[in-house]
Image 1: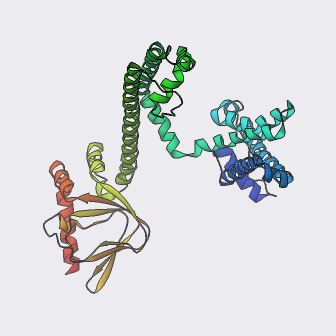
Image 2 (image 1 turned 60 degrees about the horizontal axis):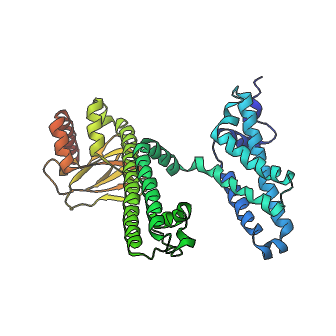
Image 3 (image 1 turned 90 degrees about the horizontal axis):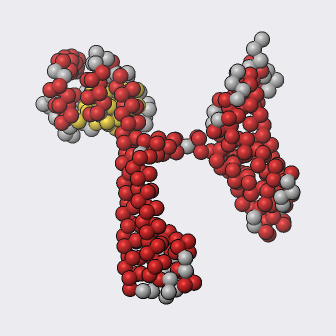
Length: 376
């Protein structure tokens, strides 16, 4: 029998089995996040003298319990990697090294004679375990990789301005303030504070030329950080558009109405459609209002309130097309019956789409005539 079955389904401990399976296959479980919060919060209490003196035993117990939890989690993943034939993949991976550091840092510090209150400060490393589970940070990593060229170029400008400003202030201020600007390394502190526009005020040029250089350095600092902000904002916007495009493409490709379209046509549709998620009993269309868009049901169901009857439309159906075909007055109330994902096509985009793909006009016209006959 395969030994991995002992991990997946230990008969005597079903709850433990579920935890072990999730632990072996995920970056972080929900329980692990709670333990991280408890451990780091307790570590903070450790630094507060009155709290530590009053609850020393309780603080120690919580910290050791958190460490035991992460040690068990680490051992489970090591065993899972060994049984799956990837014995060195996990221990040498980024997640494996972070898990190992979180488990071994405090015991090693204690073993080398570090004071317990100081050693337990290393439990702050548990926060790093949560990083792989944060989606936004993965997007940031992609942005940094894609935009590393421009970012490094701005960094080079930053360092050049930093060093030039330090040398200039050293030349201009060394005689007036030898204790503050007596060397280039000493002037670097002033340059960093000024270039980052922090301005602590502890080191200030007093000569006229020194102040002119300081003003130029501050202006350069605004420009450098403005460039960094622009590069990162543009990168995040591009990544967001990419992610939204991929999600919308996947949704569009599942709608039967677009099933006959080729990849280029689906790409056109994906760029034009907006995706909205609506809860049950949400009003989408009010009777008598003017319409300027139509809807495709990617998932869920809507109810059309017609005179004398109600009609349910499910996944793959569309509605509101009459507003785009000439009659822009809505003739029925339409609400969702359950959680639904809708694709919205606006009037302007509809006309562009019809111009590029005339076959869709025939399909929508045929469906509109069929519904008009049913509603008579």
